[in-house]
Image 1: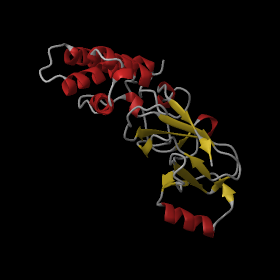
Image 2 (image 1 turned 120 degrees about the vertical axis):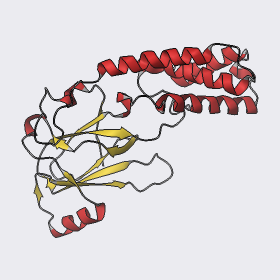
Image 3 (image 1 turned 30 degrees about the horizontal axis):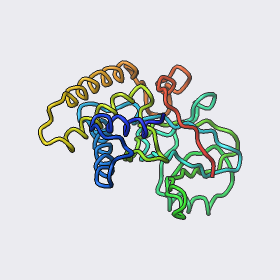
Image 4 (image 1 turned 135 degrees about the vertical axis):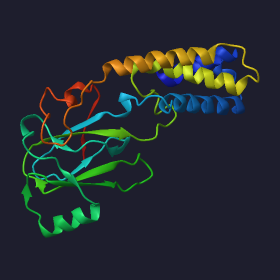
Length: 244
């Protein structure tokens, strides 16, 4: 069972009414409780979750200058650096997309990338809209690039996006939060311990997330600390690039 179905079943059990018997107003309120439950975890105000700052690692291809970023990408929070056997090259500098396009028009040869720009892909309304990364010069071969990025706004769950962020280890935390939100929405004077259960789950998850984060991230200037022993290899969540 995916997270979307599971949390709705848990809320139905708490309310004493199976989902099959919900009217339109109840279904809307349940969806609202799930959104608020997710927001209460993501924006808890006391911790920056490591799973909201995953790494993005991708391999360039000879002659390809545009790469698709993860759907949840908001912005890079570390330099875009070469990794692996390419770590001797300096970090890549971000420029406005207009300036990068101008540079590409003036110099279209290939080489080791030194600059990049971000821009939003055109949108047809049929598929979800991504951001994309453009490199200059156009790569003349295969290079490994990596950076840590900030995840953008977290959407609510739906049949097409049925999983909570943060992986299976945070599932119980999100369910506890959604149940606390449902308690607040459906019960005028809450008499259960859902809020306390959420606070206990939150404290446990924060402690676990603290333990998994590296003590020392090391240099972040793009010139050192970029091999297999660097902080980038200590962060567990890595998104592999798509291609455009």
